[in-house]
Image (cartoon, rainbow, N blue to C red; front, side, top):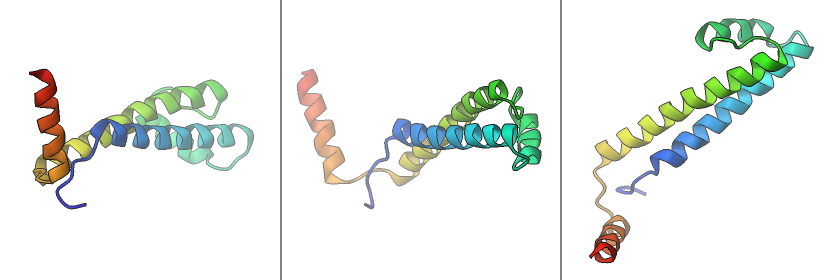
Length: 102
């Protein structure tokens, strides 16, 4: 796969969904059980409103999704900048798009 581009939005969505679901799950587990309670409290310093409660878990999951989406997008974008795509499939798609515009 050397020389190919990553879709930055897709990578951001994958990171965001995965981290958001993890934060939601841990928040709900900490609400009903003692497991993860200290983690949720410490992450509450990073994500305002994230507490071991149902409302806090949902709020934390939303903030975590946004946080991880931005990081995933930036990782994908930086990868594409540093990789300097030179694969034939990317050049073919660019040429097809240019032909459609004209």
